Length: 446
Image (tube, rainbow, N blue to C red; front, side, top):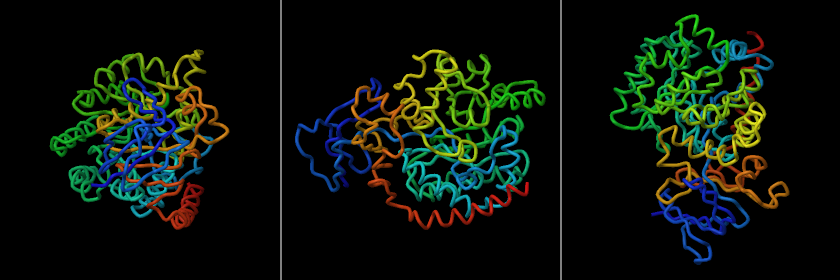
């Protein structure tokens, strides 16, 4: 049995059901599970490894509820365009350079960026999902991904039956690749790229292959007004209504919809009844001028909200601290209310609520005995983090990824003193620069 001791944290922000904040606390992790959360005054604890947490804050790892990690290689290639212009430009680069080895490289780079910034879990969506999973797991992430579905060939050039075959093979492939426990997931791109009949077939296939284990559905929904108009012209329905017609809102599987900016009141009611969650990507939505999700209206409808960064080619980074801050500030600006999107609520959206949306709420998302140790330490010995008055406000409105010192995933220290313990970072960056040049040439030729 391995025993890791996180000794004398100045603060432990548990994000438990009562948002308990502890002072001068020691946390013990045995074989990847939190087994003790105890006052440091009770005395020292022996361990195989001890992390000195004096002057630091311990909290659960952040959960990115919607992203596209391999798109780190496409950062900055589609600027000053809306969603449709973005897709046209980026898909050209993807088709030219994003083969499995390149996707693995981009996912490793994205997972590294995420982990260094304190994000331990990502709900990722990208072509060549096996390669993406291999790269993210190698970096140390708790990485949720599955086959992407589109009616047409898409950048990966696959036919529909080939996509279904990948879905049927995914549980065994995922087990072989290893990594922290995650649900088996299916990821149709959107209701404007996947027909209602095919969405129903994806659902039936996922139910078939899950074999009683955890499973997840995710797709893009109502990201901008043009998407809603397109889907209405095709089917006479909203994207959410299309999902409902395909059985996606039956409620037997967790569902995460990306963006959800332009949901109708009826859409929100349907999603709430299904227990679905919306991944709010405030940065991407603002940058592409997609609109502003009405935070309080969505919450009051009963829909769970999580925080996402979207991919690097639309939001330009994977910074969950910035994503939290943007979500809070945008909600207040658009509602005209400074009490909307409290720091408590936003931090929960980026941790335990995101974990629950993935069906992982009993596993990660808070610092509690019995949960797996996906944990983050921040250095409080910084001018912008001194003094500490409201610790939740400090995290949402002042802290940033540069304050992260150490990160654990599944009990393993994957970032120590601000450096990855798993990735040869200089070599990774050198390879990424080479591929980036090819992607830029492809985008410029489109």
